[in-house]
Length: 176
Ligand code: NI
Image (cartoon, rainbow, N blue to C red; front, top):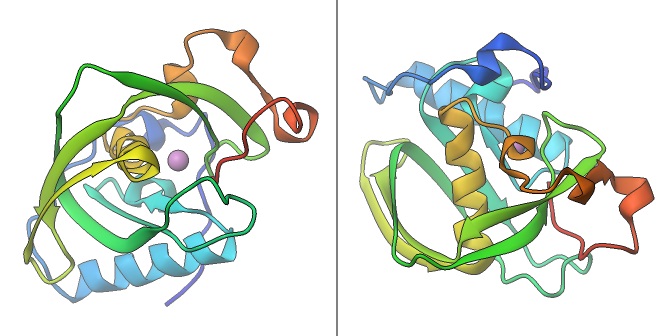
């Protein structure tokens, strides 16, 4: 296991559509272990394989009870491979997001409030969940990475995009 370098916005690999995972093998488990260490070392709530330099359709996310975000329900630790998202509503909510690939920045991003996600865990076992709130938001953010999309591309009004330390006090804090 290793903490890997996190690619930052501007790297061409972050704009690519990642390819599906074909084998649930030791290489995938190593990649996921590295993503896990890298996410924790950077205090992230999620990370996608392209952010550590692998153009593969795998993401992980988790939000433990955190006094910094008392308004957010915890999200269970999830490894999600080859995900498929299905919005279950037309309703979108705007929320402040950050990203380990866009360090120090925050933006107000619309996301579907409720969706179903399907995919596989690291062992290839199927996952099928219906979620809402921050859980729905973090899945959409991470899966966007697999389609080459970073959250600033989703910000509707760039007046709602800026440096976290400057915006502090103007926004409801959200995990990276
Ligand atoms: Ni991100």
